[in-house]
Every structure is written in structure tokens, then in C-alpha cells.
Amino acid sequence: MDASIAASGPAEDSPRAAPGELDHVRRFVNTRDLERLTDEIADPDALRDWLTERGLIDERAELTDADVRQAHTVREALRKLLLANNGDPIDPAAVDALNAAAKGAELQLRVGPDGSAVLAPVRTGIDAAIGRLLAIVHTAMADGTWPRLKACALHDTCEWAFYDWSKNRSGTWCDMKVCGNRSKARAYRERKRAG
Image (cartoon, rainbow, N blue to C red):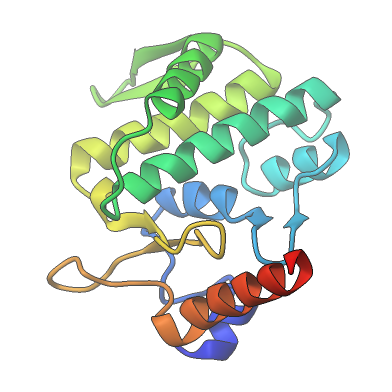
């Protein structure tokens, strides 16, 4: 991985993008940059704009601070599942958070006129948007693409979501030269401050 790409995050047309709608999930997780401590969906307007750009919510939706907190909870629970896709144990709290979000969206099976079936949220607003993201996760699990959506395993340093296109499913976002050095430098600074 090129250090300049890892340092700045992926471009919109990144080779680490996930296929189809699954990329909405990757981008949703990446709305929080742990290294820079930035958040693209930090307030109701930013969250609505982000969801609207991806067709996940109506542009007239009025979101609240509680909706932002709900989106953040789901985002971090999804990040935990992506870390599990990269070898971490499944976090039971993340599973509970996603189950609660699916229940809040009231996901139901809908059969279309062509006989195909999809999961669709009954609710509106943030519940519908989150329900659509969870339906994408379900579809990815069913079609086998889910295990390739991962988060960088260098905890508290990166955890950037990426799609593993490698043949043997061993792809990484960062290498130790990038994230490892950042982690070591941060630990050194913390020891220096404490000492």
C-alpha cells in the first residue's frame, strides 16, 4: 500500500472499494477517521447529506442528534464486524447493536414483481437508512462478498475499511511501515508525556 494513500484514506474510485452497494457500507464505516479524529457525519445535516448522496434517505428528512448517535453506534458496530472479518473475535456488543438497529428498521422480506426477494425497512428516516445498510450487509453475507470487507487490524491507529480483492483473502490496508510506525511514534509520545 502506498503510504500517501494510506495517510489520506481511499479515493472515491479506490481499488480497495467494495463491489456494488457493499461500497456504501465501506464508506459508511470510513466516515470516521481514527487517525485524524474527523467525522463526516458528526451532525444531523452532515449525516442527512451523506445518506442522501447515496440514495439511502430522502433529502427532506429531518434528523436529530439522537439519529447521529444511532448512526455512530451502527457504524462502530459494523467496524467491529469488519475487524472480525480480519481475524478479531466477534464482539457480542456489536452484534447486539446491529440486531437492535435491524429491529428498529423493521426489516421485512419483500418479493418484487419479477419474483426476486430483498430485505427492506418498514420504517422511515434514520431507521430506514440504517435498515438499507443492514440489508446490504445481509445480501453480501448471502452472496459471499462479506468476508472480504475488512477493517485494518492495527487497532486505535487505523481500522480503515477496505475490500480485500486478493486471491487468497490475505490483503491488508496498511503495512507495518505505515500504521506500525504511527503506532510506535504515538506510544513514544505518550511515554514521553507521562515520564
